Length: 148
Image 1: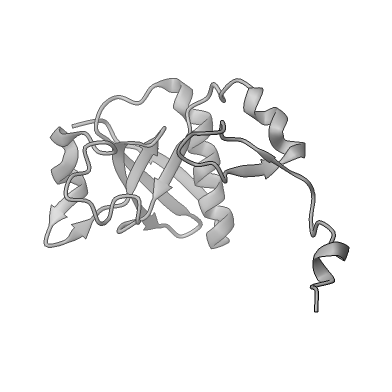
Image 2: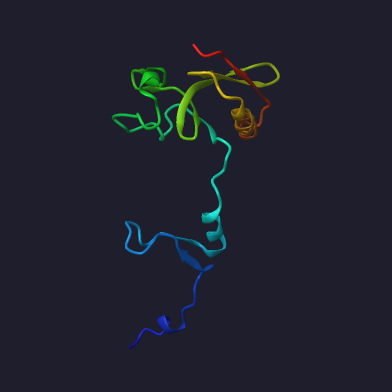
């Protein structure tokens, strides 16, 4: 008996478009056609700022973390004994550590940058701190310590 399902099947979702050139390493990479125009858009000009918690998988499981953590600052993140501090990332690179301190009316987020932070990080920092507050359902405040 022939499989009649193949003759009557219809696509189950929106149409997909190949996004990897034929013959390259990932020939099955696809995305929704409606998003394909985003591939031609210029990259976002603002830095991407993220607050990673301690033991985040971005920094776990690697013998060396040189691509994400400048070697001169590695000891400030991996403090020994298997402990990894929370990390401030900018465009995928560790630029400092952070911690929180519960105050009476808000949660204070204290950044300890490795070097002076450029002013163009402020919008990203504020957005990340606000998102942390949204997630924890608390008011937040930012304190940036001077670099060592």
